[in-house]
Length: 163
Image (tube, rainbow, N blue to C red; front, side, top):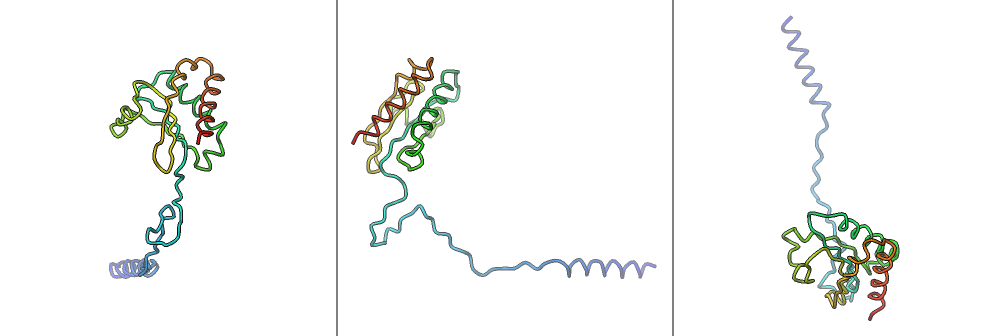
């Protein structure tokens, strides 16, 4: 009886191993080209894909956030998303939320002379910041969503029109 059991076990093990797929090893690795880079040796005058002229709308906040801080974010985001859909899509504008309490973002405090939650417009020309503006009236307008949104949209439109 033991012999039959050994034979069946051996047969079962052999069957399992023979049914298993053998791995296929490929001797070539596909090379994926990064589409966001420009070949610097190229003789063409190709532009990088990143937009070099744009407006960046920064909302700076801390880790601890009050109800007004939440409103600043919500109202500002709504103002940008509702009026500047095409500009955001085309890369002419970016929306960025930055927590200034994080160590890597501390430099923004000096860069934009921040002392509290702020909405900053930054005009980037040829890939470098040309000027910036603190939309400090958001503190006065936080109690009126409509006026807040109108203010932000008007300021951004004025920034977009400037040469």
